[in-house]
Amino acid sequence: MSVAVALSLAPGQRVWWWIGALALGYALAMLAGPTRACFLDGLRAMARYRDLWLIPVSLAVCYTTWTLAVQVFYLLALPVANRPVFGWWQLTGFPEEQWLPLLHGTVLPAVELVAGLSTVFCTTYPVSALAALLLLVNWRGCHRLLWQTLRRRFGMRGAIFYGVILLCALAAMAKPLAYVALPWWGEDAGLAPLRASLAIDWLSFVFEALLGIGVQTYLILLAYLWVRGKSFTRQHLLEVAIRRFGVVLRWAWPVLLVSSLLIHLSHLLLTVPGAASWMGPNWMTAVIDRGVRPALAVGLLLFFAVEITLVFHSESLRAALRDNFRFLRRHWFAMMFFMSIAFLHFYAVLVLSGVALAICGSNSLAGIGFRYLQAILLGGLGGWLVASWSSLYHARESAGSPARKVEALT
Image 1 (cartoon, rainbow, N blue to C red):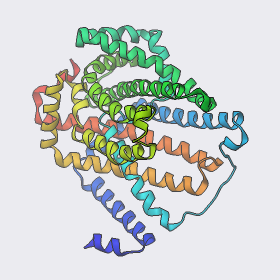
Image 2: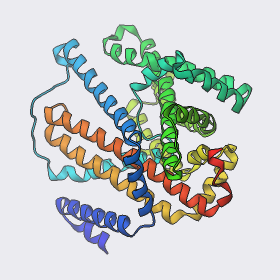
Image 3: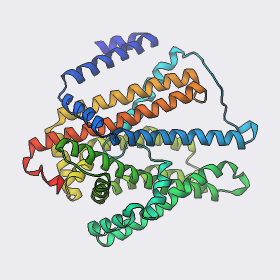
Image 4: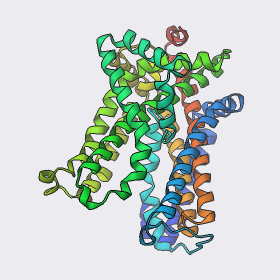
């Protein structure tokens, strides 16, 4: 009956009803839910090890700075008609009829952020370009250690993964240049530059995702070591994370393959004359936004524990998939609470930042401040939720299978 009452209200009143329902659900979940202890552990771990929040916040701030720098570059280099618009203050109202589109439109991004906690939740661009360079120059022996890990884990297939990673690293280094040069390619250049930029973006996306998975592996291990009270050095933990990355790659490559085929290959198909005649950009965008992205998010939620299982236990992918469904079946109630609370946090930040940017303007002085605030909040939330997820998994998995407690540290 409450849903029927909400639907019968005016748009403005309906918004406040949804806000009140979300606030009540959040309070009940945090105070009476079965995951309260793991969230407190996540906060304690963040207070003990700053890397848990500093790394994702730094990555988010770097991405925001890059997007702002590109806009400033376009402002200085492009013709007047094509320049982005900046202003000191662009304060406007927020019409009531925009509330529901905003509330509905931020549901999918928030769900994707929750699903990203199971694979990679933070963007690594443009830091990925620097990381690719450091990898190629064997910074602190990372290149050599990666090659040894892939060869030991996969044998001859490790050489294939190694070559793909190097190719993607080169694309990650080239992506900033292609990103800046694309607006100056005129129509007389044909489709070749566009295809090249899409291919570079595709390969760079793979490296960015792999780097994000490596960062998340590092954060998961960092939170786990806090739970166990172990001492370590950053260099040693980095080496352990690279070795574990070789295990997580068993799950990462099929996920990246599916997302690449469904999203990036679709964009490349638009540059083929035969395919572009029956497949337009608007149709493709609608298919990706309404079909592909929700399907990928739901799929990652169904396999939420695969990555962390591989991080803690050197298993085959088949065994990790089996343990994932066993874990979700045994602890579905706690997982439901955890995902719901994570969704409410991400959703609240996205809605509030969307309102602030709509009122102030994204390229105003206040809007730029809100963009940085959004990056800081999302990065900090991501680090906290990853630490909390590591604590929840360790507590539940240790209680259900005590014999496997030590295996994660061997």
